[in-house]
Image (tube, rainbow, N blue to C red):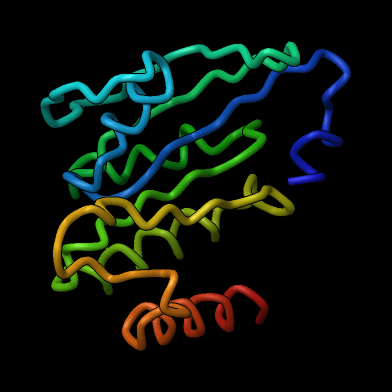
Length: 154
């Protein structure tokens, strides 16, 4: 997180992109951060954008980009000149874990992502049966992350 505050922070604002597969909870996260309340959302077609200001004066512009397969081709357009990527993973959707990791890998391979901090947010932890990161990354998640980070380092 230190890099977030050191990379071009003289003007104290940040552009944060929120990516993840469809139904991962990206829009819900965005509006929860904005209003402090959980809201019902519809699948995002295109993007949602909201601005937030912290008590210490840092402004964030958060871009929630639709995660449907047909919209993922547009993700690279949003990865230019960002300060942080938040990748939202649906912890209940184990059937699409490999697809989610492939989408994350694709995003991280973008040239504009070099040196950009990434937060992998395991969402829907309140749902019974969700993969719990507190358990030290369950084997399917750990295997996918190991594979992903090995590929990135090469």
